[in-house]
Length: 368
Image 1: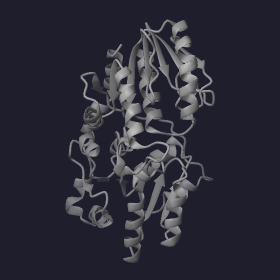
Image 2 (image 1 turned 180 degrees about the horizontal axis):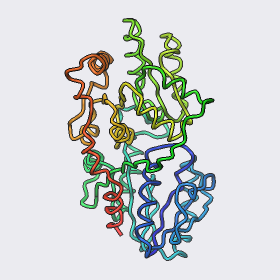
Image 3 (image 1 turned 45 degrees about the vertical axis):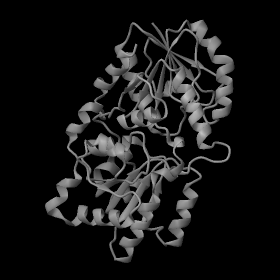
Image 4 (image 1 turned 180 degrees about the vertical axis):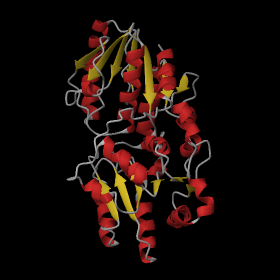
């Protein structure tokens, strides 16, 4: 069986989609040696950096630009059908919008979230209004033979927009670092000094929906009451970070909140392990890989009260109102000082069973 995987949207930027791709397909390709995998690469990034050199995988460089969705779409519709026809593909997989439909080929479409379908998140603009986002989404769903979502929450959101019986849920996997020889943090690294402080950790790209403004507001309340806590936010730098940086300056929090970028996996692991607690304040997520990473590291965890976080934690977490800095303030103080109830902030690692890579990769393999 010939399986084509369109990875032209993946690049050097760390994201949940990238982590999912790397973890799942390394395992799927390894465990399906009788299948041939053809991975379509963007012009500006080598996907071969992420996938091991298996005998049954081939990387094909395209002219698509990973950072330019419009260019990528038009180049795709002009070149990919002919390319995939030459491969004689049996299955075509894609995980970004808009979906390219390949005639007479079984199409699997993975959706990580549908953030642009909601007006209240205010992510759309004049050039991408909500109705256009939904039109593109529905058209792609109609073209799909199998729709895969990363959570039950996203499945329900899709059903509200486009009712169908072709949607399956396959969670993102949690990956344990099996390498016992993890490189120590260099003495030249700023992380070494940061680890010496008492800090709360958040992880995720700098986007408005991540709701880091609520952390800034809460840090301001804590500082005014003479609590000396630090907050580290690790993520990919975007244009939105300027808004956050301006807020830090106005509230004089430059020495309280630190934005960290280009952090290695080893450094991130140690940041998880040494934090007072992990805070995930998002207003919207399709899944939330940092949550299962924090659970794996046995962090105390404070979560916003969005539906998908309650799904992932089986409603066993400690949640705060995503719009209330007072509620987050209260949870931070409880997490630190209320020794009798501190266990409420620790999520049992048993919830990670459904995110086991062997289980997840089998679900993907069964689609073939």
